[in-house]
Image 1 (cartoon, rainbow, N blue to C red):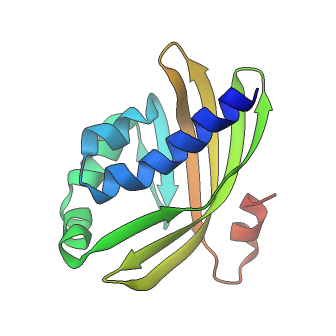
Image 2 (image 1 turned 90 degrees about the horizontal axis):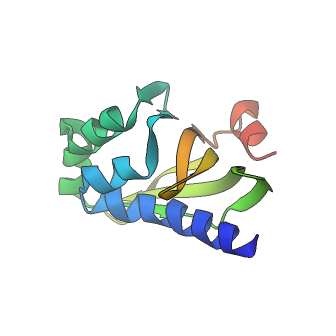
Length: 135
């Protein structure tokens, strides 16, 4: 069980490293083929769409400005071959805090290890939706 929590924590930590290095393949590999990522009102459906997000103009522009995606330690709830993790994330842009968000990660154990099936990210802007993700 604790091995699963470590593996999931490492997977979540790998997200920031992948997107900040511009490694679209590594970011996509964290997700199942049909996994999705919902951020800032936009939903990226499938690992290919997540890879396109990282290689796209908007993200490449952030990389050029100096972006850092920091993932807080997750709380992980295991249920057999499925898990839910919640955490905070902070995105720095050129050294300044740009966004602080709540995240909910839904994961599944695969033959290749734990993968993300769904990630929801919402700004912690005082609204209820972001706080609800952390429950």
